[in-house]
Image (tube, rainbow, N blue to C red):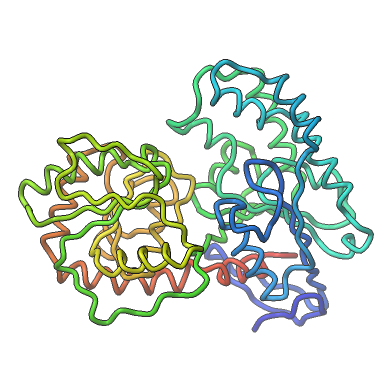
Length: 409
């Protein structure tokens, strides 16, 4: 039984994170005012470029299910933003960018823009912010409940191999303190993955019962049709990753070179970066397709063709906050090889929907690529299981369901 949003409800049992919660009768579930902002996330919740496309699908699902009152985005006015950039100047471009986004003064300025965007009617509802770039709980000051939704946090970002060198310890401490203050002011934090949930508990001392894993969904306008006659003997492999190095692209090329020495008919398709210079010794059997825009009909058609042709998807990321691409491969009945860390290990079950590989290990990647490409029957079973797994657990409607079930509990 589902309670209707915005109306009284009878006692209802919900299950989330393997726990049963019983709501009391006559508890009103309010709708949500959604808030995004900053150059990291975007300023328009329904712009497909915001939050790597996820913002659009996330807020659309909340709206379709009647959970959303409205959503808006903010950014600091250009003069103030440039002053903050100048204050954080560093000769190392990546460190400069990180210092700017970590700066509490920039985050306070974003919070002020949120305050200016709020209307009186908003306080009849609860609030949900993406990330912790602003402090909505401080603005609300107990007048409503405030939630958040995350694919990462600063502690995890700083631990990643991609974290820039030369960051100021003082600026890191101030930024961590800022995020901790935000998290402790929230009624509940929603996370894309269980590994991230544990980070909030361990790194920011958030009580476990206030952090709920709600997952994430595939960023597709419609679910692709099932392919009952899909072939798994093609020995064609697909890699998708705009950030080629971080997604493990160079390790894929090295491992594929070895695989092709034993399987000369194998082919690797690379999608993501707009430009890529592949060394001559790694080019055999590799087709580079550049960047394919899912919103462009031609990009859509090409991706559909590649998902149909390829029998295996590979993305051995060196760091991955979440990773939507493997889920989109799985819903297209393509088993996946991904790294055995972060949220990736929560998506792919070895032997059922693909395989996990040691982070950074070309040897492990080569062995598992060769083994799976040599077993079309196993790939076919994995492909069917993978699609069913995504449809059951990794859609934005499922995320909206879990958020609604966790509100006011």
